[in-house]
Image 1 (cartoon, rainbow, N blue to C red):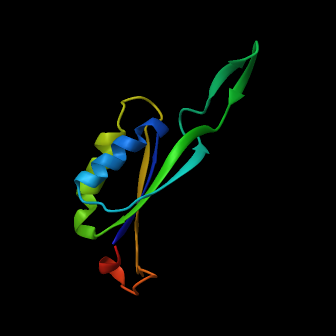
Image 2: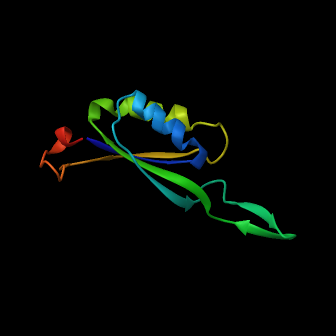
Length: 112
């Protein structure tokens, strides 16, 4: 099993959710986060004063998939979140040792 953590632009959330549903991913967790990478924030103008915004709004998506669904899931996220502009985001993949569904006690892939 693999944990996929993707940091994407907020307006791409619905497209990514739909793409994941198409490849059979049944559940995701999405969190509003702030951060910056190479784009290093931007400058905004408010009431005539210019100020620097260092942390940009992003969405962090977390999904656990069976190892055999990994490539299809990564491709779905990549295609749906892609704009071709700086700040599209990143995807991190981590191994998961054990999963337990609290309600039923199912473990590992049957718990997904």
